[in-house]
Length: 482
Image (cartoon, rainbow, N blue to C red; front, top):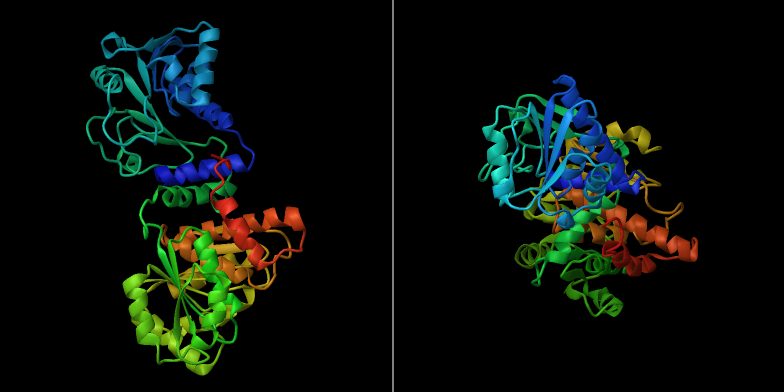
């Protein structure tokens, strides 16, 4: 079952795979016409009521496939106000073919007649709220007839995310929905799921569609803090790792980024960017002493924590990470040296774990040789840990035990030191506006797509800091599949 938002993601991914929207509309309209033929005789009277949005397209296509029936088409509104190209093209095709078509500009002009079958193509899964005129009158008149009613995608007036009806909806006898069930349809009788040519890869392989909801939320945020505040806890033996992770979070849309590092390297971290808020703690590495203070900062000021970049593997550092995870119950991205702590830690926090293939074994998983061949083992590990896994490799696998997707983006050999730290920062930024699984998928896609852009420019000669510059061009590219 797919929500309205998830169906839009899948359709966009399919477009990125090279399948045109026109193909979907043609296949959908053909499926609707076939259902009409299955339940009626040649010459039966059919009224098709089409809206001006996406759902009107398949309904209008169905008219072309019903040559053996007596078909009449009603468009609700003026043709020049049709909102989608495929619906407009199909209306114009019916007009050029001199079919029996009528534009209804006023609800008082609406006459659905007394047909044997009505095809409801008024609203699709994009609809929410209450219908206005002339759509509301059309729904009432459809329900008042004795005709068998076939709804396209979902009965018009129903909310495709909740299955609820805010005001009025078509009382469909049959529903032809596309690709997968939508919420609410499971309560109806006579629902058919029609395949329209969307390949499995559109769901299993992360594409630009998976990025769109996050991109939309980040663009829509207006006040400081709406897009999340990230707290990176790292450093000690290494200084570049926490700096890269923190800067990546800013580049990926986080509003504020705090960085907790040993005071021995605090000035070095400040030198990377004046945009980072530095919280130093005493010493040369993380120990138990500052943990309560770090938990307080994370709880009071931050939405998401990144723990691990550059921490090192000293025993007291590992104990400090374990204690932090025990005391903190928010959102945490666990990377690098902190990963091995997770299996033995009890935490109420929601974790995204970002191991490479070798680090999976430290989490209690298999020795990974080929990610694609070992997806089931990774799913079992994610279910056992009860956290989301983002396993980095030539291809990246994201799984929470229930859902699994693969990221193919990224040039071969993108193994430059620091790229994993950049990824952890992007994951954290997205974790502020999305679920753990969706954040991990979109972040891995952005990092890979940024790497592909840099590879076109530099070949293999780019660095992790170059990725920082490329991230916004991928994340906020308005032209990409929109």
